[in-house]
Image 1 (cartoon, rainbow, N blue to C red):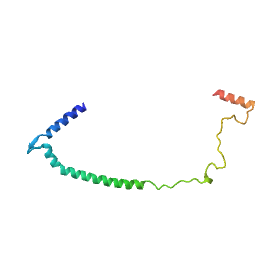
Image 2: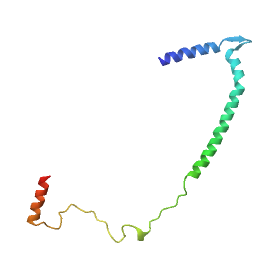
Image 3: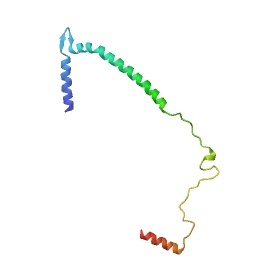
Image 4: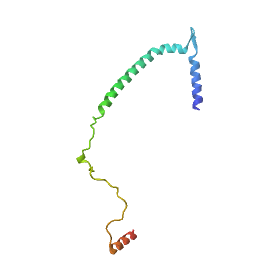
Length: 113
């Protein structure tokens, strides 16, 4: 529906702008000559505003980021010293053993839940 309406209005406006008004000129030419100075002034003003906005934006952005200092890690303050090796723990059984009484209590506690 939108495409049909668009095509209809486009054709209608094109036909109106092509109406000859004398001297081999169409209505579009007359309107174009009347609007051109204002359109050029609007384009010129818009370009100036865009240029000014870009300049202020760059200035604002450059002032918004803090100065970055490089981080360094001092060996004395690091969490793992170089002499110690970090080993991955494996899933081994605990080294301590439970007495028979403790094992029974653990079974009771686990079975209640």
